[in-house]
Picture: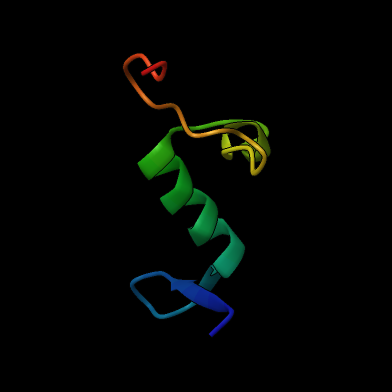
Length: 56
């Protein structure tokens, strides 16, 4: 299903909620609101950080 109908008490169509709107709402609920979601995505070329001294 790509959308969910929104109806009133008389079952008259008042609007729709799209899958994209639901995904955005879930994303914003979990990770917080952001105008550009790509800024919060981890960088693929980032080196993992390891704690402690690696010299011996």
